[in-house]
Length: 410
Image (cartoon, rainbow, N blue to C red; front, top):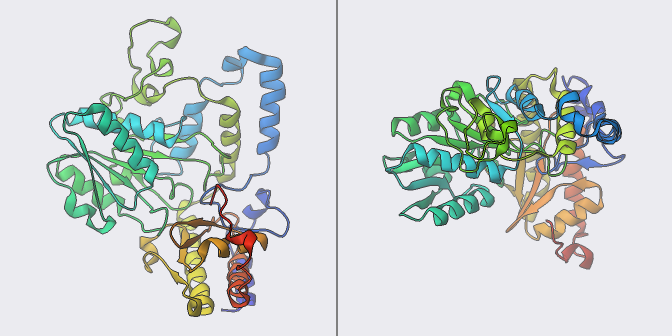
């Protein structure tokens, strides 16, 4: 494919107008939205207003006057529409790790005679750390069992108390079949928790249709909520009054302003809240989600896979002779919206790309990773990124001390 062909694809892109809704730095090809999404226009103004007018002038009355107290639920409803969940089943707040701890503990209480937390070796390490911490805290024979991603289905048996699965692998982009694995877990009597960190905002998700029990996700990647933006948590409606969160706090109390010393969990998704949420970050996320008001997630998925397919084709055709090879499935239906390339000297190569304003990231041991965010990534961006990568490898311009020196964040 030639660059002119990519430009033609951009002219017919259903999201070509959406690109203008983001603050993309001039001359930059940003392919790291799977780690930190681009700033949507209007968010900075919303945060400034929240600081100057709401915090600055209304002060504590903003909890009522500006809806701060109910904002996690209102933002949760916006997210629910993007992940195939009904209203009042998602709440925004805390981090994935905190939310995962809540849900793992709740799931284990639902199956008190079982002792196995099942996950896979492709899961994001932080999820595994949370499970290890809870296992060690509980003692009493609890264990974390991890298997290869392709072996998850065969590992779900009657010993499993809960399956904890990330839908899209953060390295290879391999995508689990949510509906099939959920049905299999239920057939074995186990609830399942889905981590949507690398799929929410990039792919069409149907939590309700899959009959998923629980889910967590972050909002600073494809949902563009900003660095450290609040995460979200989903509980299937019929489980909301049964699930007992492993962390409890006053925002989850049935009557928080009675200040009763005894805990009485609120009904519904509200009980999954702990303490006071960060309103500046919540306001930024609320504004960022407005970008999605007229977006169809099936079209997002279609473009995501078209971008990934094109990049794999271009990168391997031009860079395969340098040992570059795409990780993960070639069937786009089994992929998320990022591409990782095995690349010798991958860290230095990525630093050279960044110096040339092609922004991706590196994942050990040898993967250079590129996220394709359908709302603002163009097909011309994909062609240009592959072209820059090829030139860096051909000229060995990556082989410089400043590119070889490891930074704290990769």
